[in-house]
Image (cartoon, rainbow, N blue to C red):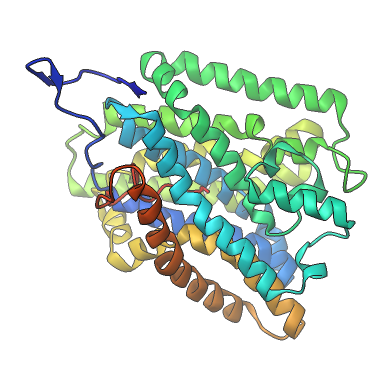
Length: 400
């Protein structure tokens, strides 16, 4: 099934475009993926190597997941808006992008840590098996309990949410391109309804591993996190209409990029920690999970074109390479931290965790992620060289 978006060029009654043409290269966004993954790495240092500074900035660093969601919506919309595409090929590309690496890291977890400790929670056999099945099927984000979300490779809940966003993307894009403000408002209303229902029916924090809570509902449930993805989509459409055509001097672009980056840093490090710490109830859950999403949207508006000095730095090949391996880095870093703690106690420091995570990320990226994506996409008519930024066969996230 093909869904048209925008005008389609024809000749003698036949469509000239069957698949989306390669996306314009936006290397700055690829590099930003690594910084989002790095935020999550720093957040998890609170468990691996506790220190006052890691605890202090922890609430801000957790927003790296929100950054992934906003960025994912932006990139997919940038690639597909105004083009015709096959739903089947789109979904195959999404599975090819995420599933092989996800399953590979689950296998790596089982190889790196003995089974009773690999679960990550004190669960019985049946509960552990159910949690593993939900994780492997990328459905765990739909079960807002600590027993499921925080077990096994716990960071994989975010790709479960991403898969839900991908499932809705074609229909959401059709609505967003016609009525962006109304569509974004509708998604916001849905998110608000989920939080309101959760606040009315669930305890704020979990009283037990198997009990749903507002904390886990608001942090991981796909319908509670969908606004960030939709915000990224709306931001991409706004960028395409107003920012991309703008002809500004290099110095002015650099000033805009610097102002956006400085504002984002001040917000994250000075505003987010006290706001999250001082909030309670549903407001606390929302601020903790996605309270920086509008800041990230503004950052993408400023940096996506990469026409200033900071955009040029982000376009440097080493940073782009880190961004390309960011999904693997995100998926492997907690396994590395847990394995180091299990086998060596508190001996190995942060540098060891970072070095091994980066090494594992590049190994998985080139040995698993790229070749398996090629093989899966070959089932749909052969491998094509991916666009530099993302789809239909390239580097979506993750978020995550």
